Amino acid sequence: MAAPLAGQAGAALRDLALRSARLRGGFAAVQLTPRRWLNLQEYQSKKLMADHGVTVQRFFVADSANDALEAARRLKAKEIVLKAQILAGGRGKGIFNSGLKGGVHLTKDPKIVEQLAKQMIGYNLSTKQTPKDGVTVKKVMVAEALNISRETYFAILMDRACNGPVMVGSPQGGVDIEEVAVTSPELIFKEEIDIFEGIKDHQALRMAENLGFRGPLQQQAADQIKKLYNLFLKIDATQVEVNPFGETPEGQVVCFDAKINFDDNAEFRQKEIFAMDDKSENEPIENEAAKYDLKYIGLDGNIACFVNGAGLAMATCDMISLNGGKPANFLDLGGGVKEAQVYQAFKLLTADPKACLCLLMRVVVTVGAGHFCAEGEKGACYYGRGSGKVEAILVNIFGGIVNCAIIANGITKACRELELKVPLVVRLEGTNVHEAQRILNESGLPITSASDLEDAAKKAVASVAKK
Image (cartoon, rainbow, N blue to C red):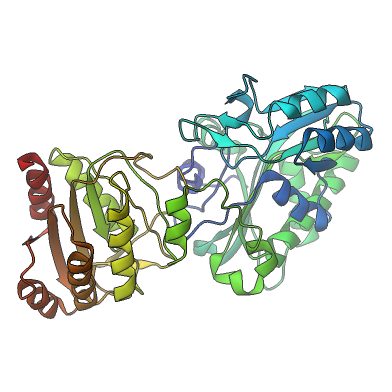
């Protein structure tokens, strides 16, 4: 059946990262939870799939040109595809600082694989999603190249509105699924799964039929769909997306490209998977922030935002912009914040004159009567990425879960011990706010108080203008 929310689904499911044709979230009713993102390289995701019986291309991973040559020979494939392994998308159109163009290459000659690997491994690859200087390629994937006679789209994701998993598919794959949802919503199919009973044979077959698989390929596709569902459950995924989910001229159904999202709350029972988290492409300050269960992403402005709740953080960034300023970050302290985390956030913020923060913790934050939530990922938040110099700090806290007094104590400690040199504007509201205001007022520190968000934004922008 065609999904009635097809148009909304495309936008709601799009992950904040700008990777094309990758559906990452849920239907419009799904509530996303801010959390530290688990980063897996392509070869790691494909190995997980292969280990669970899902059909993927044969491949090897190499960290030297010689290993790449040996891998190409071992494949004994008619054609070989060599892929640079970085987390950013757009590899095919990227450029290496070795001069090589493209992070994905096809060849039939293993010796060419070696030559290409020499220009990839150890060099920086720049794409639209990497920092300006690119990302160093440490590994390459040497895989069997397969012809694709037809491409479809398939994903399994958790939909809170349905209280369980939902399959989403389209016979029109290999393209941006959002465009399909807008231009051809009748080509988006949805199938709800009872999480207690599991996927039924007739459901898998119906989805395979809707995806356009015919004859023996229909049963083969249904088998792959059931294996993908088993993978989804066993690894505590929130989404498994395959695009394209295709067929070859030889009559084989293959998962050619996949993206897997994981439930961070299941880290305690998925230790092997979370141990694969690739932090090598993070900025050093991002890894430092992660030690305190915080996540760092910088923007291009000069006013740092110190907020609890990603929705409130984005609203704060918008208010700064509306009043003529530029946000340097959005920093979400989350609901379980401790005084020490407030101190460490200030410490990270002031350690580098060009540092900016986006610290997202794994909590759902209630602001007023509604929930505000968004997902941050390295190099991909709503406002971009940058390294603007912090010239003022705006603290905007709504104390629903958070105790404002804890924030106030953390602020005063940080200001004294770190000798804060930039203007600090603070707006606190909610739980224990009067005690928090007393702490700030009696601190003797040059802290500017604000009555509401707009007042805080205006004062923060004005403090920068005075300088």
